[in-house]
Image 1 (cartoon, rainbow, N blue to C red):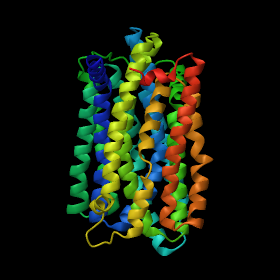
Image 2: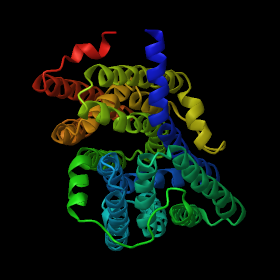
Image 3: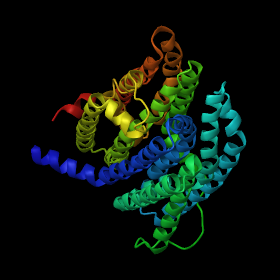
Length: 449
């Protein structure tokens, strides 16, 4: 029994360990940006990051969508020994990434200033918005690179080179850290320096990608053929739930910023940026673990190997919850220390800030449960249920964000995120159990050894 358990863990780590590591590295990207901005630009820079983060999520949604959907479609083609087709699909994805990224960069630069200035109504708030806009005007230009990096991570897993994802992410993060230090500390370029560092790091990431595929031992064809665009629509269908989820996260973040500014809580806007950084540090590795093992679950489910895919789900659950609770205890015990890491020593960390952070992470273990369940639904290509969950903040969290400051002190507004975590986990549990019943599978068997 124990031998079976450990062999499954080994198999899961083979599929998901590198993805977990890659996204853990990716979370360091956001963390280092926050560290340099908070400590060397100031609290206003952190407040601007809260606005920046809400906008960035929109564009990350496209990367997540194609990463999730692309990995499923390419993995299927490879599994069917259709190497030429898999290469065509990958090239088609890169073509779409370039066109889509350029389009979004142009549209974003046209509307970003007006879009953010809706939130500002005094001189201090306008100053913060101007800082955010100066950062975004530069980083929006790197959108084609960002989407391509997301896609490449998925494709490298599909061709059996998951560790190369870690190398790619590590290289871009290291470049970003070095350039942040140069542009922000030495050259004192401020927010524009942080944005330029991000742009150059992502551009270098794409150069690494092209070099990899040119000299890869996989012997990719040099032909520039692209596949039928029906595969892109198939990817969109598979990844739509995750894409909608990211867009809903944008809506909640944008509305949170609006509520904080409407209540003259600019000090909480800076800690909202810190909570976003911490959440990415928690969620990205969790998502990496569950996304990484999706191909394994998909393969076993397609082969109707019930005992094996249930075993993988069980072990994935235990790994996810161990990681989740470990992080949860750190968040609950050291919120002040976490906040201080991102805030200059000359700036105060108030009780309101600590309360905001604690309320944000109050029910964090439910994030692990939801991530595990949504990973199962994606692996089994159960798209519509993920879309339903992705849309739920529109009807639950956003109204809560509006009403909580009317009945509680403003710093408790972040409780809406914790309550949404619980709602998403419970909704996902209900929907996945209905899927299992529909397919005549006992959900209980996941936990029966």
